[in-house]
Image (cartoon, rainbow, N blue to C red; front, side):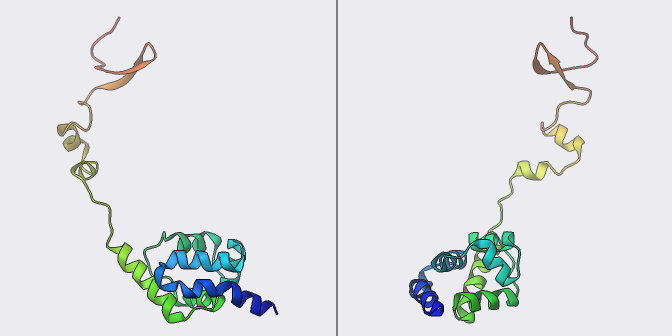
Length: 144
């Protein structure tokens, strides 16, 4: 009896598989079964944080086949569909990298070159609090 209830709960997720990405498919399948994240992670044998990352799409490397097989078995989804959606997600997000700017590159240069580009104050200058406000002053100049 419990098995038929689970099959009825997961049926709407099976119908809409083509419209969903990997993470959304996992989340909606878990919600349809009424399971908590930590319970599913116990069954799959992975950490809850890892499962959360899979559901939210915060991963770039392909999950191990053992994880994908366990997911397919738990949610009663064909392994080939689970693997295909995971591969598609990885392919889409592996190429998406942060666009580096000139300023990003400058932060990795030696201090002398960053100083020349105006990213650091001149040598010998320091931050000295004056009347509660931080101002840049030269240590050789005596302020009254």
